[in-house]
Image 1 (tube, rainbow, N blue to C red):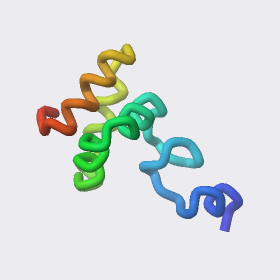
Image 2 (cartoon, rainbow, N blue to C red):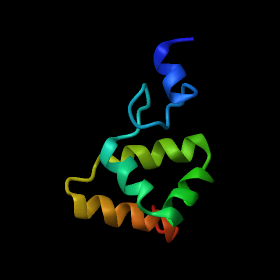
Image 3 (cartoon, helix red, strand yellow):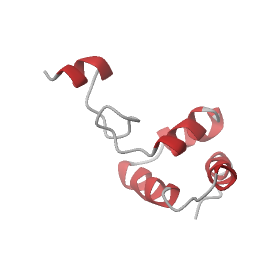
Image 4 (spheres, rainbow, N blue to C red):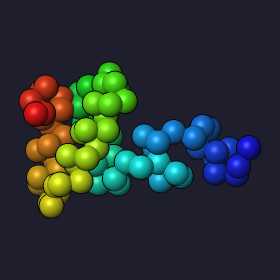
Amino acid sequence: MKDREKLSGQNNKWNIGLGGSMPIGFGLSLAANEKSMEAFAAMSDAEKEQVEEKSRQMHSKKEMQQFVNSLGENKVQ
């Protein structure tokens, strides 16, 4: 097992850092919003990938927060 996998507990692409592909700003905003975090966790991998790609289009902290809030309100399109 690689040292990084030992540190993270598993090799998961949805991790922030340690081999994960989730953008840091998206992950931090998601972690601060329990309702949105639960909605994201309930998504299929394909849905998560679409949401992750949309998160890369956000250009400010405010935009990211609005985007993450929309996840918890089931308003992401």
